[in-house]
Amino acid sequence: MLVSKPQKMYLSSVLKECSRKIGVSKYQINKVVDGYYNQIRDMDSTIRSKDLIIGIALISEQYGGRKDINEDVLDACIDLVENRFGFLSVAEIKTAYEMWASGEIKINGAEMYGGEFNAGQLGKVLGGYRDYRKNIIAVFLKEKEEKEREEKEKQRAQILKEKFNQEFPKKIAQAKKNFTTWQAVPPFWFDTMKKRGWINLSKEEYQKIWNQSFDLALEEMKNRKEKETNIFKKYNGDDLLAIRKNISKQIAVFDKIIKNKKWAIPQKQTV
Image (cartoon, rainbow, N blue to C red; front, side, top):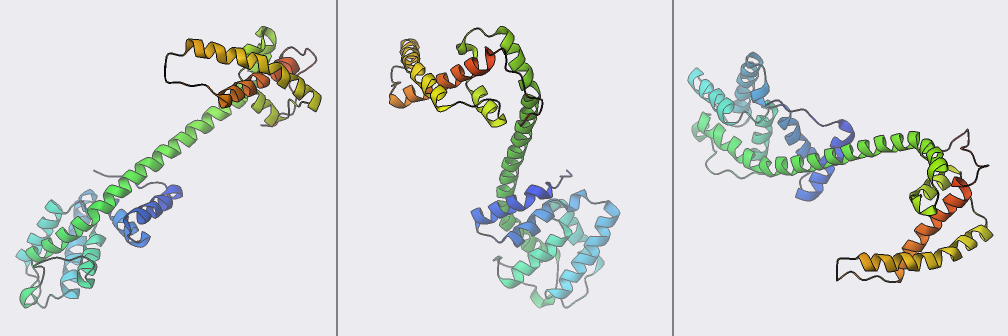
């Protein structure tokens, strides 16, 4: 199955996280990942056969084979790679031999006795490399999936933000027509308006609203306690403070914006 490589903008961060988690260099992980996205089984059959013939012959020459590979052995090697190791890339065959030769992967019985290269020796080296890369691919795919999920969430959040920015002025206009009490005002409207420079409170206005919110917050917390179904839920001073802050925001928006007939949405809006 042909798989698509992740976008470069987050592939690097995925490789970095994989390297941190499994203790393998980012360079080596990148070679494995590049192989994952260039699998032998996904290649055009003509190109695949040509590349394997050249690649296997070169491997034999470079890593101990002292005899020319006869046609039967070469066919057996190609069949082995296509049938058992099609998930590797052609480049990874050389990587496997490099790691075997350097001792980075330990493989029993992979020696070329008498300098003779054959399918059995090839299979042992590639099998050892397969076991080595298995964990790398597993961690990579998990990190890739997590990163893609994060990217989708960011895109979704951005879309919702843009939609909200477009609709917010309309919501305010509707609220000025329909809201009759401060309770109808969502508390976050205050933060949005403050960010846009639509609402500002003097010290006197702030103190008046803050004083007004105390009794209202006590009443709201009392109502919540009466409606609470979780017997283990405890309300404390922090809960009262949070309720009081929200009520203060609601009152501020209602008094300064909603019921203020002179207030209008600024022509130049700051988002």
